[in-house]
Image (cartoon, rainbow, N blue to C red; front, side, top):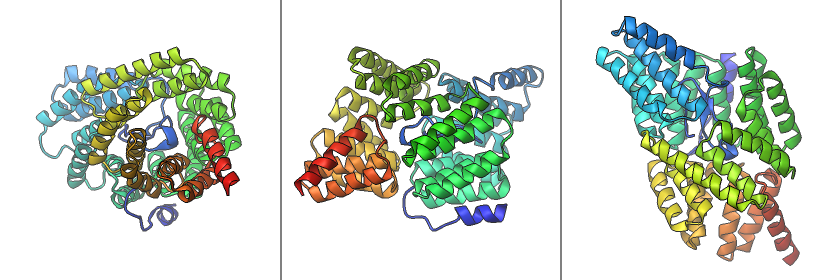
Amino acid sequence: MRRSLRMVVTVTVAAGTMLAVGGVVGLRDAATPERAGTVMVPASADPFAATVARARDRLRQLPGDYRTWAELGVAYVEQARVTGDPSRYPLAEAALRRSLKVRPADNPDASVGLGALANARHDFAAARAFARDAVRVNPYDADAYAVLADAETQLGNAAAATAAVQRMLDLRPGLAAYARASYDLEQRGRLAEATDLMRRALAAAVDPADIAFCRTQLGDLARFGGDLTTAAAEYAAGLAADPSYQPLQRGRARVAAARGNLGAALTDAAAVAARTPTPDTLMEYAGLLRVAGRTAEADRQLALADAAHRVFVANGGRDDLTAAQLALARGDARAAVAAAAAEWRRRPFAEVADVLAQALHAAGRDREALPHARKAVALGPRNAGYAYHLALVALALGDRGTARAQLSRVRDLNPFFSPVEGPTAARALAALEARS
């Protein structure tokens, strides 16, 4: 098995490669638009509450147990991820720092936990440093390589991310490693191999939450490739295994929206946003409300998204990408450019390049947008959204040839990539073809 996995994953990687990143041994977040990067563990409700309670009980008896302090910190990080509540982050940091205070040296558990926390807060450079510290102490720690892979991915270091994923596969070829390897392949446009790897993971899954997770990834891969029928079937099968797993409901909403069933899409999106009111779930719901002509409700959801983002920042997070997306949704191009540019300086990741290009285009600065739009397409070769945004910039610059080529790519890659932009792309391509 390990040999076959190495054949799949170890390849020559072009320069540049997903959350935002969450869990320590976690996987990507199926909720992120166009699947660009968030990593998470399959989970239902809050399965970490019991872990937190047990750890706290033990620490009352044994306050010098540095491993349990680290376990408690990691559990708080995971609680924040599954509940969407970043107020857990300061608690996580306090517990992990306490672990280091008790045992300052040779404490890879605390370093891994602090790396996971840094990833969750989007401080990917710090996460990489913590992961490297853990690896120096214990080069056989698969969890350290998970944190390292997530950080390197978000920092745009494709070769380093692949190497970390491969090391994780060699050490512990389980679901967390399979999913990271699948995402690594997907980032380079190798969707068939990414899907094959997730099917292997599904074949080995027994727990309902693991099955739900694998079905979500398979549904997302199918939807990303424009296969709505397969995507819908995967989401349905996942919900049959675990009806509480929200990313499946979110995927189902996206399929419904792509098929023009706006009522069903709104129902599912509203349920997800109510249960996990993070900036991305709220923004996605707001977008669907706007499509439905419910502008006032959409504005309220955007206000909630902005508030959720402020809470994230207040608890030690940094997310200029979300700030840029919120500014674009409000129509504030200048603020969007400033935020996206700040994020790009921190991490040259494909989604960041795309959002920066969108912001510059919205500000009428298309010559500056062009290299970023091209970069996004180069880093995300099978992303229809990136191709569409490059087409918009090309059209604004009067380059109809590039616009037509990119709109044709959208049609070939995934004409259902967005309930708003997908139909617009089709109309724009038809108009360009009519002029030929």
